[in-house]
Length: 206
Image (cartoon, rainbow, N blue to C red; front, side, top):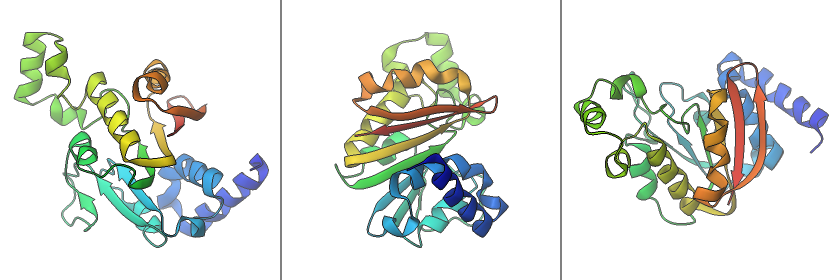
């Protein structure tokens, strides 16, 4: 799709949906690049990883597709029925192979971004620091590089052939980590670009 057409479609959806969609602007662009119209998402299965306390996009997509959101959302008093309160890896590992068409995340699938402020206070993090960088230990720690690679591998397993992972990365300095995903998780990079000072967009295809 030509960029001018894509941006026109994006502007139209943002205008319709309002300011609450703004944090998801770049993810919406990539969904439109792939599918052109949200109506084409019907009968598709979509997963949002780590929604935090903002369910704006996944709620909107639920009008068109079968959706689930997974992650820890401590700030919510009332949680939607499609939210699975689990660590990302545990959630993905429980899903059937080739069961989803699209997986996306906003500022999650990057190193040290899974509820990092909370994890820094935990006993397991203190133990990891005292015992050193053993792979066996860090493999289970939700803020570590090894853990996130496991997440990407599980995401690939869950995706149907041709399905995509859209990852909005908040830290522009994690490019080296994401460059390694093609090799380590067996995913093919579709597109990459930076925006503003601190953001990157990565799209991978199975």
